[in-house]
Length: 183
Image (cartoon, rainbow, N blue to C red; front, side, top):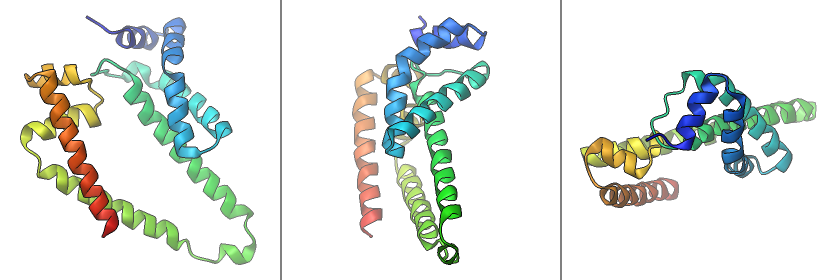
C-alpha cells in the first residue's frame, strides 16, 4: 500500500501541481525549521524553504522514493540550499569588508574544514566497527530515510530490532563525535 507521500510524489512527478501542493502543505513547516536551524534567520529560512520546493519540483521525475516519507529527501535538498546561502552570505561579507581585512587569510575556514574532515573520518571509522546488520540499519534509516518498519521489512527483522539497534548505533556515534571534539 502506498503512503500519501508516495502517491503525491508519483503524481507530482507526472506534472500534477495539486499533488505537489499537498506535498508542500504536508512538509513546508519541517523544511522551514530545518532551514531556520541552519541559517538562524527567518527571512533566509523562508527563501531557502521556497528554493527547496522549487528544486524538489524540478527533480521529482527522477526521484526513487524508498521510504514512506519524502521529508528526508526534502531535508537533504534544504541542507544543500542552506549551505549555498551561507556560502553566498560569507562571500558577500568578504566583498564588503575593508581592504585591510581582505588580506587576512581565512584560517578559521581552513580549521573548520580540517575539523569537519577529522570528524567525518572518525564517524566513518566508528561505522566500520558496527556489525553488518547495524551498518545496514544505519544506512537504510539514517542515510536513505527509510522508516523503521520499511527497514525492518527490507532486512527481515522486527520493527523493535531496527528501533533498538539504531538507538544504540546513534548513541555510539554521539560518543565518538564527543570524543573527537574533546580531543
